[in-house]
Amino acid sequence: MQGLPASAVPRMHAAARAIRDGAPTQAEQLLVAVLAGTPNHPEALRLLGILRNRQQRFAEAAKLLEQARAQRPDDSATLSDLASALYGLERKQEAFAHWREACRLRPEFALAWFNLGRNLQQEGITEEAIEALREATRLAPDMLPAHVLLGDALVHLGHFDDADASYRAALKLHPANGDAWRGLSNMKTRPLGESDALQLNAALKHPAARPPDRIAMRHALGKLHEDRERYAEAFDAIAQANRESQSLATWNRHAFHRLVEGVVAQDAHIAQSQDAERGREVIFIVGMPRAGSTLVEQILAAHPHVEGASELPDLGAVLAAENTRRKKPFPQWLGEADADDWARLGRDYLARTARWRTERPRHTDKMPENWLYTGLLRAMLPGAVVIDARRDPLETGWSCFKQQFYRLPHFSNDLTDLAAYLRDYEYAMDRWRAHEPERIVLQRYEDLLDAPEAQICTLLDACGLPFDNACLDFHNAHRSVRTASAAQVRQPLRRDTARAERYGAALDPLRAGLARPDATD
Image: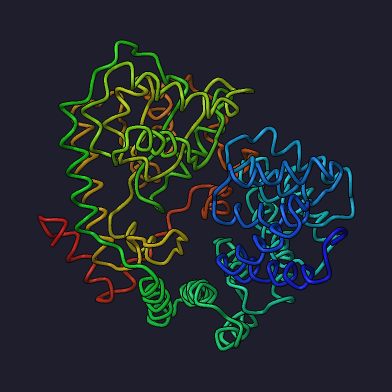
């Protein structure tokens, strides 16, 4: 606060509280008033930069924070906040350099270690993320998010005992923390115990439990009941969690159906590529969540030529940037793009994902929702293979319904919506695969269970990969698995994973939706 008049100090404190409490208008008014009286004050600039970061106005944030840094070049807090702005601007290398410098300049600054660890984890640099997050929890044992994210990172590397301890450390700080309960229940091969059931029921009544906490805890309670074969209680808990999610944001299945129809209708107008090899480095694994895509990736990532990159946002980000450039929403501009446009977009994707090919020549991209872009990939990345990972529709639907997804609105919160989405996906993928059976490969989960060695050999051949015995022992592959199946794919194949039939008539809305000829009914 040095250099501020006494009257500005309460405004600065009030502005910081307003940012913390999600009151951006109040925070901005207070900071503008401070800067009007004391122009270019570094701490007021930093707080305004934090506010702009929260608002995702990253270019403005970076400018403000650079101004603050010019006056305080060795201030770790300013460096860390500037790194956040640069990360938002996709200047990731600079961002990580600033976070690491913030930790070096002030090694006791827990928040800098947390920010470094959180974003390393976001980028799949899991081992270094664990080191940074452990340092954050050591320096600030009461930093709740650090314990949760440390648990997530440990799960991704298969360190389940340590992850369990980290999530439970978070619950000691806040017994109704939904993220910690979500982490515990997502270790699907480790059932929750009787004491967990008592704690969950008590935590659901906790006065500090927010709606997202209650949703996560009800999903965890549903898994606990299912593990104990209490199927009616499991369904009730999961259905209530989904109703609460739907009350926050409702999925529009009719609008999504129109989107799919619009994408498919553009197929005939997409310019053809003359470069059949572009994208040969990439293996896309697409389909419904919970349909075995992580298993397929684990098998391929065990191969010495393939890096398992997990769920990458890059394809969607490239297309979103093109929406902005053309000032038209996807898919309206698809027919306008010529072969040069598609080549440019393909190169953009390959540049964004190049770090996944530094040690191995090829990488997987396992973002399930990329199925919607399968048709346009023949122009953008015609050399890429697309694996359509499928599982029995009823089992897939039930597995989605009982899994918590954080992006809202989400199709999985309602059984009828879920069935409509699944039918839209199958309709589009069946059409595209009929046109390009060599590039788009169907891999059924049940076939892998029935004949794993033969299916793995066929899968490798479809991807243009030589056979390697390591792919048969996929569960031993050492890698970061950043999905809800992180525990399951570290075990040999199991035949006892089907659960849907045990729920009987409760799943009739899903059965009825899957049987309808029109996905939008």
